[in-house]
Amino acid sequence: MPQSQHGGKVLIEALANQGVKRVFSVPGESFLAALDGLFDAHIENIVTRHEGGAAMMAEAHGKLSGTPGVAFVTRGPGATNASAGVHVAFQDSTPMILFIGQVASDQRDREAFQEVDYRAMFAPLAKWSAQIDRVDRIPEYISRAFHVAMSGRPGPVVLALPEDMLSSLSEAKAGPKAILPSALANDQDLGTVLSLMKSAQKPLVILGGRNWSQNAAKAMAHIAETLDLPVAASFRCQDFLDNRHPNYVGDIGIGVNPKLAQRVKDADFIFCLGARLGEMTTSGYTLLDSPVPHQQLVHVYRDANELGRVYHPSHAVTADAGDLVTQLSEQLRDQPSAGRRAWTAEARSDYETWQIPVETPGSLKLENVIAHLNEVLPDDAIITNGAGNYSAWLHRYYRYRDYGTQLAPTSGSMGYGLPAAVSAKIDRPDQEVVCMAGDGCFQMSMQEFGVACENGANVIVLISNNGMYGTIRLHQQKRFPKRPSGTKLMNPDYAALAQSYGAFGAAVETDAEFMSALEQARNCGTPAIIEMRIDPNALSPLATLEAIDD
Image 1 (cartoon, helix red, strand yellow):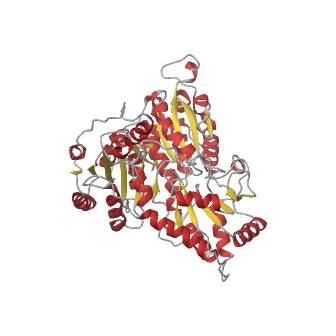
Image 2 (cartoon, helix red, strand yellow):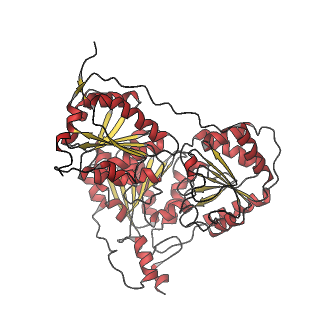
Image 3 (cartoon, rainbow, N blue to C red):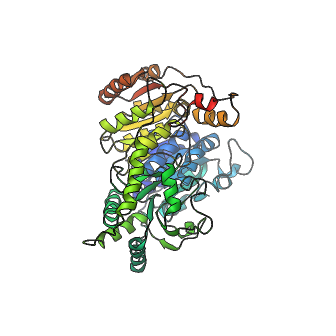
């Protein structure tokens, strides 16, 4: 006969049936039964120091795996802290499920201790937010949550768990693993896209979104070579095609190469494969006219609701972009070149020129730091970052070689780099993981370095310390010259912080010191922090504080 068990165990069994191997959490009394369910389960519980860290780690897992990352947080402050990670998942189209402990049912709507209406709170931030009020319906909700998080445009799901519901007994059994429908393009769409790719005189491919893969990257390389197509990456999707490939022409995002931006405007066909064409990828909606671009727009996206949302496409295809390029590649065998080498070669030349470092002030130069990372890191090294001017050097000069090696928030969330790095290293312990962070960005989540040390996640954190919120200082100097306000930062001794955890820590002030410290960090066998003391005058790859002063 079926045995009764409390809702916490029913919930964890349902997650196990969905293939969940790891969750991220900050423990709370509102979901003690779920924690009890984890005690006997073969699901690892990574306990973080802040709910925002738990949510961002879950989001990073979702990015890397393509399946929902799972986080558990407590009610009220726990949920509000975690909302930053939910927003990252929403804007990045990442599958994720956040479970929130909730007040008992008999206390609802009384503004009980830490009570929040999570349906209302997360409605604009999640694909679906709900509350499980009956223990026997847990399997149903979990099945739906996984289907919703991964289907169409992936995204976050939020489920509230009333305390008494989790403690109630049930004989409910977990349902089967979520199975998504095929997202293959039909033959007619494939034929149309292929025909348009062949006939375009000045085409440009823009890659982005989710549901990509190593196989898709190889297929895209084959298509680009065969049809002489220049390929660009949308914001923070630079790892979708090997940046060394002769058809890769750069990224279209913040700090876009002006010549690439002009090439978008000059193109006669834009083949947007998987990207949403949001603000960052269109330079504030200026590279394409809205609602009808003057370029012919072929837009491939898995969710039909995104097609035509801002830009009216000449041809729209509801399909998974990664699957579509794989299908196209299979049809291109032994086909002749389309003969657009000059157009593509010029675009590549512009990219190569853009890659030539521009010297910045100081004895330790971020352009040289990135050049050294290009030289010494393996192709499969994972690079993470949050938000800040320091990331401009990374985006401009680092060459991503393998898919799944760039973890960064398109939402521009500070504090993301370290939690993402910890999650990535736990997921993929055999790959090197490097987090780049500014001093302001790192301090928003630096407590998660303890999680790295506790779990043997030997990440290397490179902190660009210029003593300020550099991005804001840059904008401030442009709009309100010589009136700095609210942008100065006091920093701790970051090397000592690492050493206090028994990890490797170093502070460097020259290029040579950095190279030596990086070698030590890569071989130390512990997590590592390298504090890079950067000249405050070096605000961005192209702007100095002194020049703006003038």
